[in-house]
Image 1 (spheres, rainbow, N blue to C red):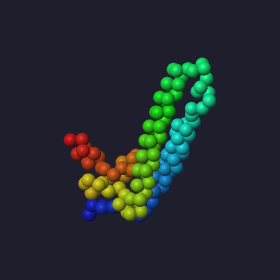
Image 2 (cartoon, rainbow, N blue to C red):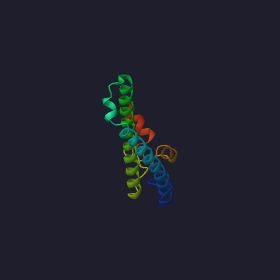
Image 3 (cartoon, rainbow, N blue to C red):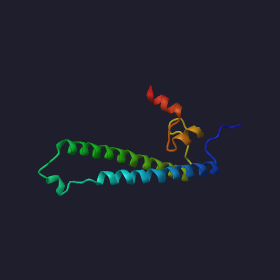
Image 4 (cartoon, rainbow, N blue to C red):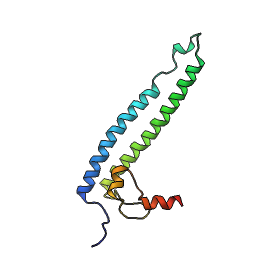
Length: 125
């Protein structure tokens, strides 16, 4: 029996549903993080004579961390959208290095994966 070169349309539809679910959750998380970054802006309360340096420093660090998390979440969303495009092109699940199918278990865990474990290990060397 010949080795499979791509997933069937039914399998691709299963992955599409999984990715769409993850995309909805990721976008909600991104909106939450973006709102946290946008909140607590510099307003007239910052000009108070009782300026609290430590609290301000902690606030800035918290905003920076939320910004990094939001940026990371946006990258994840973009990767999920790219995976949906690969499903449309029927190239989803094919390792971009080896050309072999990425195992379903890996795609279920990391639905935006473009490399098989074999290819990831080759990168480490």
